Image (cartoon, rainbow, N blue to C red; front, side):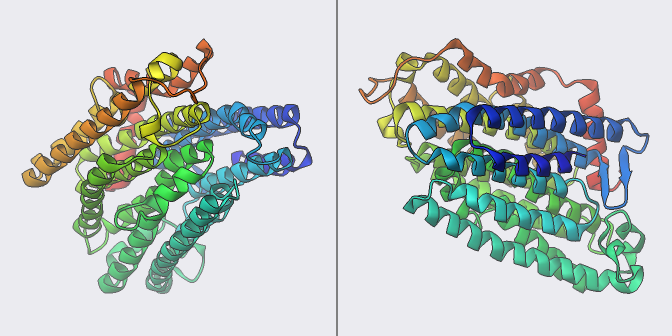
Length: 484
């Protein structure tokens, strides 16, 4: 069981801080995680009903999608951590004795996210999301300097307040369902809830759904509840930033999607939650345009980009059409791969240049040509430029705005995305060209190009969608839209 692998791996990290031991244990744990998780995904997608499991552990196509994202990003990020964190120790940013605690909390973080996507119970999902907050708070503040501690405090306070709203929403749902299904775990089981969807009090459920979406939305980073996100992403070690942006935000969105799927079956219908999601999505996209244009810190730039892409996902899922939800499901995967790669390559860039200020980073092509090449690919992918897969997924989402009678929203969404593309292009070209600073450390091996693997996957999926992936995405659409 992959959750057990993550917990055992976390405990094992505490026995030694030696580099060889940590690398060996992490490598073994990643192999076991990949094998057990891959087997679960295969069993889920090979079933006629695209569902697998019993009791408190259960997976369907949506669970399998998130599980696949978690495993892929975990393998990529932890392998990158080997060299990155060793360099941080070498530069005396923290003592070697604390390196084991870094991997301990990484694996605890992984265990909580794996729990979120492995249970059919909305109450346990809330516990898992709350667990991610506790684990990642210590990772955000890992460097223990003033800025990191401030970011960690802001993160934990805002997310705990948000998740408290989600708890209240879950309690209201339980109060509404318990008279019908009994006061047991089944009252929050999303496999059982459709049976009583038509009998719920619309007012009570509407209030519960509103609290849940706002609460989890704070963890997703929807504007205007995103204030924690740029600070946390910028102060955390870059591998942690990659996990936060590429996986954690998606897990919180996953919780919302479970509520959304059930809400569509109630008297509220698809419009109530869908409208809330689209409102948060459009607001996030609009506000982040200005932040991205004016940003000076490269890690904060990527953080604001994460809010933007969560907004795009919210619009796609909120629209509720097959095409838009298919595009949003694909975009969830592609954004995770792209953002993990960008945070990893930017983390390496910051180590080499000694600064996060984009105005002080120049001439990357001259001193770090392989890094520059990957940054160009990342730029094209994160801005949805053809032929990258993010272009395909964004077109599927945005075309839905016009097909469902929202041409004005569609026009402004395209306008905002165009301005964001121009902003990213300006920031990246400034860093790639020009005269490099004497502080920059030149030299890198061709092995750096291996960091581009996620972007090559995104590029491939822009030109060709394998039939197995397309079938899986269609099943995700059925799960979210209620078997349409």
